[in-house]
Image (cartoon, helix red, strand yellow):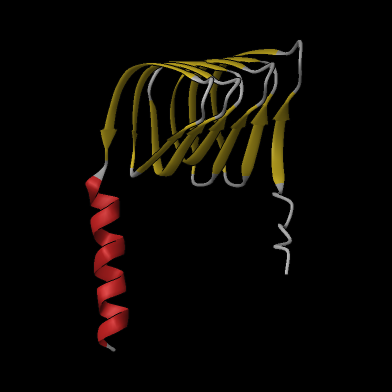
Length: 128
């Protein structure tokens, strides 16, 4: 049986040839195919498209990088850098996935706090 994925709901979008300087905050998922300089805050996901160029401090639940990011990325769940993605800066997340062909220059820190709470939650569920 094939797995059918539900399309991700995008609540905001910065298109190609659009440049924003400033901070953005959003609740759902957001996609950037243009340029952004500033700070990004979200409780959910961020997608940097192939034409996206971001120079920012990023704090989100998860991020998928297909474009370029310069700055710090802090994710509660995961950071994925795909083959066309380029990241320069520090990354902090419980899960980091870097595809072959991707570029990453900087520092990486695994955030054990999120991992430990998931392990503890699983132990509590198992004990019940």
